[in-house]
Image 1 (cartoon, rainbow, N blue to C red):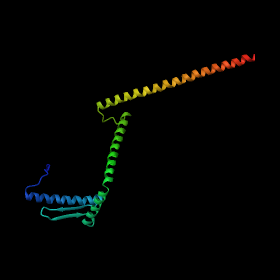
Image 2: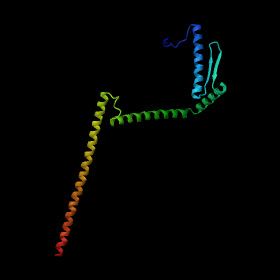
Image 3: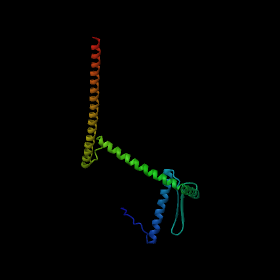
Image 4: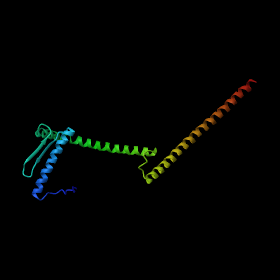
Length: 179
């Protein structure tokens, strides 16, 4: 039997409505029990039928204790509302930063030639163009540094040449004066 999507609106037929209530109530009570057992969660469920009949489930010793715990928690949240707003903002920022880091790691792996299997031709072309631009910048910087180093070496050689020339001059002058 194939189930169709149930439209969420009030069931007009009273008998159908009562049958649906009964089935869904039992399913909800079962799910509450399963959640409490499987996840060791404290669960309290209160249901009133259309006629006012009470149905309840509590995984702890009593519903009033769970309700009391709930009310205390709500009070704590009310007094810490501003702190929770900041906490949520921090969580949002952390999530955003984590996504950026993940994106950067994926991008880095692709630049290293890893994880390219799922890439389209267009993505691979963009990656190739980006790598070409990066390589051009790297080479330009390398050649700039080589030119600067060459200039420094030329200055040292020129300086060294003049120093040797001056030393030869002075040593020649001293040699001449001894004669």
